[in-house]
Length: 209
Ligand code: PRP
Ligand code: URA
Image 1: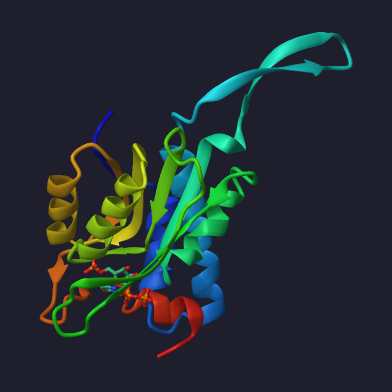
Image 2: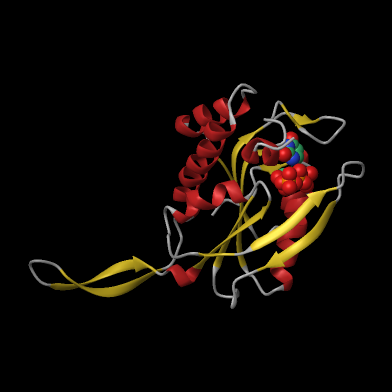
């Protein structure tokens, strides 16, 4: 399997274009982030393990494959990653949800951890880390470091928009994870914001400034 999957699907591209528009309000922004996460999740979860269960159809009893919620954990990077969680839970409602709190220092752009709570045991789960923005990659690299320190092994990282710098940094730091990106943008600006990007994802999802 490829380490990095960049989505070129028209539905995802269309929704990302609406996200970029600064006139798009909080309600619509939040709904679109969730929808994009669900569309990306459809692809990212294609190797989720199945187990055979017995089901009685109106005709006969058969063994048939089902997903076990115990096999999946969604781990948003706070705050903005929270906006993607319900999109994944719409696909796998019984998945467990962990949280990693990180904020970027406005001057150094380095991530600082303020919270970490993961479902236990984590070792055997597929772990989908969500964050709409992969900018310098510092937050993503730290989040995956924490998850690995807690025993996480099968890790996928999902970002709606990525900068080339951030993607390269994450790939280099964690060559063993799979990375799903909705769209690759051009570059970072002097404040480490993605260009053209969509601005501050957390502020746009939660209506703060
Ligand atoms: C944003 C975003 C990522 C991070 C990406 O969070 O949601 O977590 O920046 O930047 P990086 O790749 O350079 O680390 P922010 O620190 O603004 O926190 P917030 O979600 O609480 O607003
Ligand atoms: N975080 C954001 O929310 N947006 C960016 O462009 C970069 C980091």
